Amino acid sequence: MILMTVGGLFGLIIAILVIVFMVLAFIVSRIKKCPSDKIMVIYGKVGQNTDGSSRSATCIHGGAKFVYPFIQAYEYLDLTPLSISVDLTKALSRQNIRIDVPSRFTVGISTEPSVMMNAAERLLGLQLSEIQELAKDIIFGQLRLVIATMDIEEINTNRDKFLEAVSDNVETELKKIGLRLINVNVTDINDESGYIEALGKEAAAKAINDAKKSVAEKNRDGSIGEAEALRDQRIQVATADALAIEGENNSLGEISKSNATRREIEAEALRRATAAEKIASAKALEESYVAEKEAELARAAREKASLEADIIIKSEIDKQKKVIEAEAIAEETRRKAKGEADAIFAKMEAEGRGMFEILQKQAEGFTQLVKAANNDSDAAIKLLIADKLETLVGIQVEAIKNLKFDKITVWDGGQSKDGSTQTANFASNLMRAIPPMQDLFAMAGMELPKYLGQNIDSEVKTVKEESPKKEEKAPEKKEVKKEK
Image (cartoon, rainbow, N blue to C red; front, side):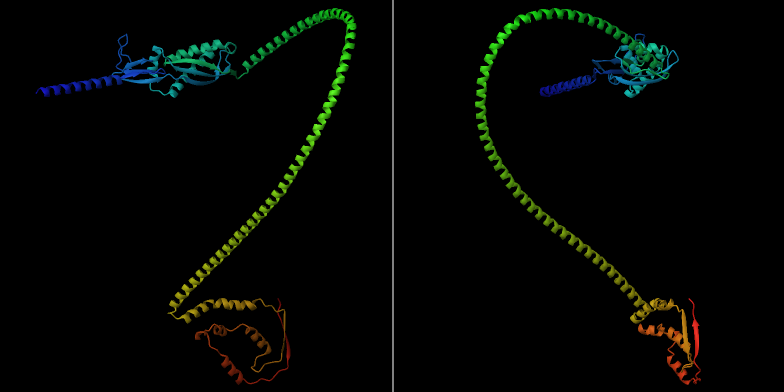
């Protein structure tokens, strides 16, 4: 029983420790630290103001704060500065002259307690781009207001006053939404009428004239001073020259004596130096001859070796070049011959496949034709020939179609034995130049159907033999003309 009591007590202690640890971990997790570049806004039930009204939020910059669960929440406001480009155009000044004022403003969320509350109430949850657009609208309006209260000369010449007025007006309005003005930079000021440019030219012309006047005065003072300095210089130089000439005359004698002694010493030194130079020159010339001889021998050996190397290397290169060219020509010839052979083989193979297809289709067609003729191959062949008969007759007719006769003269001696005239025989023989249909069918191994006619050569011959012979008439000349 005692052991069970001790075990239960130990378990209770462990459970209490676990609960205490979990509570401490929860408390620690609800302690929120605020970074230096942000403002932490705690909202929810955060207390009351001095007048008894409920506060909307608590703003903290730096440090840490315990955020109660369930009744409080928190968010951060970024303190990153925003650079806003404001290109204000055609703003009306106090002189009713429209000017352009391109500028750049840098703003950010203020860390003043009262201004932080404005930011928490008006900017919490907005993106930086949205805050930038809101601030830009405020800056545009205040900048136009400041320009409307100032003259162009005042804006152009007293930039500090202009920037101060812009900063005061803009910052006052920005604080209402929790922002503060960090920097203002006006790049340039222009106007439509050219008034500012004219003011600049006037100031430049005045500055140039003042500078020219100052230069002329300085040049005048310099010329006067230069003349006075030249006068003093000439007086002092003349006095010095006189003293120098007197001293020179006294020293000329000493100089002559000294020159004589110096010349004697120089002559002796020149003699000894000339002898030494000649000895050294002869020795140097001898050594140069020996060196030149050795150099010529070395150069000749080098040129000989170089010439031999050039000839051998060049011949070897030519030999290798010819071998490579011959191999290239042989390879090109082999590739060309192989290509031509492949092309001929492909062409013949294609023609063979085409011929095979044609013959195969003809064979299939002829097989169908034989089946249509009740498997009678002779009838099928005759049907094929009959199908081409019209074409063959047309070819025969074309043979004499375009024959033209300018003039035909016939000497007709009367009727022949069969009773026909020579003229009739001539026309008959001309028409018989075309093979008769019976002969054409006979050459094809066929016979004309009976309903197309029978061979009447025997009947005609019998009729000719039984016809009475007529008296021969005197030959008469007939002339038949056929115009083209």
